[in-house]
Image (cartoon, rainbow, N blue to C red; front, side):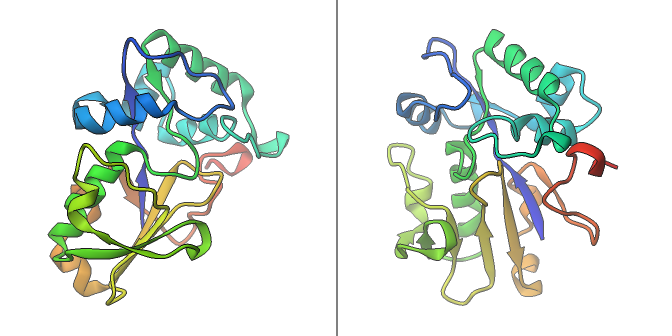
Length: 205
């Protein structure tokens, strides 16, 4: 299973972001139009903030949006530091529980590389399923409202939990032979001891 990280967005001249709010729709549309040139990786954010690794970025992000993280696992100082650093550079953190416009573009390229012209798109927990042409994901003028994706042959599955800022991509061995996610997304392969609290609180080792 691959953990695909939602990119941050650098877009000067747009409305400032307030913790607890969604990224403004105008920012999402501009980011989709501009493409990767406005993207900021988690590693860049870690370097910018002086964090030891992207694990601290994950912990800092978990106190944005809904902020549903027990106090014993949180580090408010890191979150505040990251948000100040982002605000000073016109950088928007990714929204929780949804795809960044740039991840959406990468997903389109990934789906096409796997040889799928169409996938099933759904909301959280597989609700409201519909067919989504792969080229729609790559259309910079179009927003695609999806949370989970999978093809008819079930050779891969992509999902994100409501409070998280990264996607999980599961593939069959034959699907991996066609396209590997690390070529399309920033992220890493989960190990046996990787859990949803990677990089958070006392579980950060």
